[in-house]
Image 1 (cartoon, helix red, strand yellow):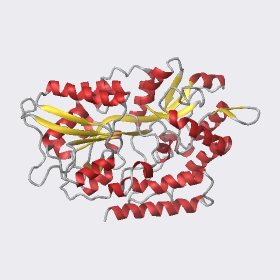
Image 2: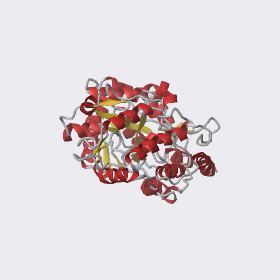
Image 3: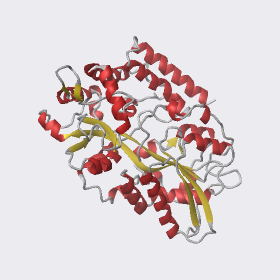
Image 4: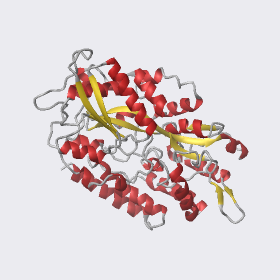
Length: 451
């Protein structure tokens, strides 16, 4: 589903709102009710469960409600009270207060590590085992990368968002570019060829805008496009030890300087409000290349049906050229709260959402997302569409998430986000020193979260 555009975590969630520790068993059940699956889901006492979701867009809310209606038609004993527009902070507070929903559907895994570590959510691994579901043979590796923490299956994936490079084929042909770039140096060269400036230097068309806060660009800086692991084997950040981070930021800054920071600011200020409507920069030809998610395929089909565009894996730093082909995968996560009142029934509903092929096909089609099981992927009718085929290829080649989830949740991301913005704005005179300082700060935040 559509990810939140501005991922400035200071805005989305305050650390205080998620700082409540929950005293609960996280082994998969409760102290007096070990994890188990329903013995006979076709015959069960009438039960109503509350399902909260981040979803607020009308088409997505309607899609979920329709899906739950289908579930009730198949299992009349189960009634779902669907509550949209709930975020991670509201969920954490409800669990701490002892009044959580039975199921929570989050828009991302940003807080999965924190929720799992402090006991806000259950490890659903024992429930999966009781239902004879093997995660490794059910879900692609990329989805397990963002739903597991400390060897626990802390949530279930529900559709996947895959981010890749969108490029305007007509503009590429006019510029004499034969195909999409595979390295960041190639992207820079192509972006400059595709840029159109007026006689006074005003940019009329951008080749590519890398700034951190434009649309989904935050995901460019997690390490997956620089061949970099955010944490080393000891669990410490690599910001101060791996030169790839400085190279990645230098690439970012070069393009910003090429256009001029004021013009980039105008572009971001103008088009961040239109990333999902008919006035978005890519659909209107104001930018020739864009980093976007798979749902944009559906948006472009409605908003710019005649646009001739392609999708490819996003380029990587030149020294990491061998890693080209994958990308960023992160998606909707289904949680079972540690203090849920209907754990078996909640897991049954969550399992249906996460693994039922017909449901996944229907929901993926309604909201333009990628299905999250091997069975659903192999039988999806969109596989023959060239745009979806390209996106699915990126998805199946994605092995890592970049910056993994941690016990500090969103708080641990803030120093890195701030450094990127400061560097883009020219407020970081000594980048190597700043990288070391920020790495140490994140390590300290992570260590504090585990105490």
